[in-house]
Image (cartoon, rainbow, N blue to C red; front, side, top):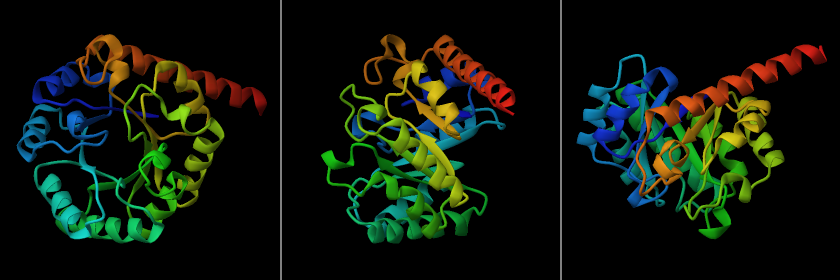
Length: 251
C-alpha cells in the first residue's frame, strides 16, 4: 500500500523530502480552500523541483463544481506545472452522468499533454452533507471516463473520519469495484494509524494522510513532522506483513 502525504506549502514539502524514504506520493493541496483545495501552479512547480525524481507529486484541483471546461483547463495547468497525479474532487457533482462528463474532459486535457500522467476521481464519504454524487459510484465514474484511480475522502473536515460516514464493508466494496474496473483505489479522510490494518486487509492501494503526520495531529494548525511520517509508514509495513502472514496461514 502506497503512502500519500499532503503538504500545503513548499516548506512542508521540504519536510516530506526529509522523510521521502517513508512515502510514495507528495500531494500538493491548499487545506484552507477545502478538503481537496487547489494550490497555486508555482507551488506545484517548486514542490516538483524539490521532491526526488523517484517520488510522485500529486496535485488537487479543488472541490470541483460542475464546470467541465473550467476543470479541464485547471487539470492542464496542474499537469504543465509538473504534477504526476491529478486529483479532482467531485464536490458539485450530483449525478453519475455529470461525473463522467467532467472527468472525461479532465482526462483528455491531461492525457493529450502527458499520456503517462495519472488522473484520479475523488468522491466524498460524507456526500450526503453536501449533496454530492453517491461515493460508491466513483469507481464506475472512473472507469467510464477512462481515469486511472478512484478515491474516497471526506468533504467537511470537522474531526470526523472516513469511517464515521462509511463502514469498512462499504470501503471494501469501493476497493473491490475499483479493482473490478481495473483502476486503483485510494482512501483518505482523517485516517489514523489504528485504521491501517483494516485498509490493508481490504486491499487499499493508496492511503492519503495529512493530520495523522502533523504536529498535534491537526491538519490545519499543525505542520508535517518527519518522525510522524516514518511512524505511519511503519504501521503500514507492519500491517502488510501481518496480513501476508495471515493469508499464508489460511492457505
